[in-house]
Length: 447
Ligand SMILES: Cc1cc2nc3c(=O)[nH]c(=O)nc-3n(C[C@H](O)[C@H](O)[C@H](O)COP(=O)(O)O)c2cc1C
Image (cartoon, helix red, strand yellow):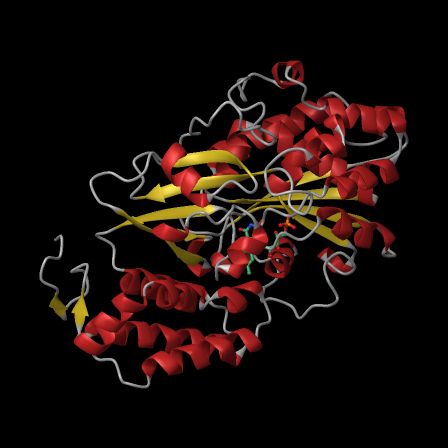
């Protein structure tokens, strides 16, 4: 299944999808090169200035699109400066762990050259001679296209040994991987690439200094890397002008609209644009039901109610509102949705996927799920709301990885913005949306 790239207003700039739809990804290298692919790479190799590339990416303010929004230039600097025994690595994270998320897949299908050129530039900038692109094993079209592009650019001498006579080597490998939600987490991903069993590692040391095979390794999301050729070709000042969120968070990000939106699909949106604008202008609002909320950032993301959709698509405002930008998935819920049920479903998913390495996460996410299930079934105890808050803090305090830190988000934001709905479940054993059973369905429920 592929998702549609939704039409966006003409004023919305395209960076990572700038070439999408303008060439046939199966038509060979020349077709992509006519649209500018590998231009930045060839310039980089001819000028041989990795520090210049690193400085450009740092000045551009590019932040990681894999979820945490870490400044890309800083990560690259740490890797370049870390001593390597034999070599450095760059790992492109195209595993796309979020269930139902098809953003990275859309990007890799539509413009595999952008991702691979970005990976090559990252390797060049940090002094890595090996790039690994990790892709979900069931992304068949992506895998086929990536293999064809790699063969073509190797054939053209853009990667491989003694690239374009410049005296350095770059090998790029695609690794199809299949696993759980946790496999997208960077330290788990690195272990999987090493063919080892993975659980998140305590950091520091970060992968940038000690990653794949204990060598300095940059792990970047594929969307982050796909922005790099554009930045190198157009310059940092041009990228800083893109988007509405200012110099702390420039550029664009891919967003996937799903759920009750009239139009579902992927769009490249300027950073800073209001979430509500995306829902209304791109998703065309909801169908028959009134817009109630969005769940932003996947199963450990946060709810925003319909009257708070002025929050901008940016890391800090979204975190302040209790959620995460995460992979950029935006699930639209209309009035027929029960937030208590949705939050509990998310909590259960995260509990099932948790690797179990730390006790607060292993036990805490399970207990949080049980509390949500008690809310849903009219069996709440008076102490449950406070217990939920306390447990959520404990889970967060013991966090070893991002999953643990963000796991309580849906329940916490649900309770924060839909307190009345939670009270109906807890105090009155009533589900206003008429979803939760066996508890009483409220009079006037829509179904
Ligand atoms: C449970 C979990 C799943 C994750 N899944 C992904 C994923 O599918 N793709 C991704 O790029 N990052 C994922 N991340 C974030 C990565 O650990 C890492 O921060 C990211 O790949 C770094 O790239 P960036 O700096 O370009 O954002 C996940 C994190 C957690 C905690």
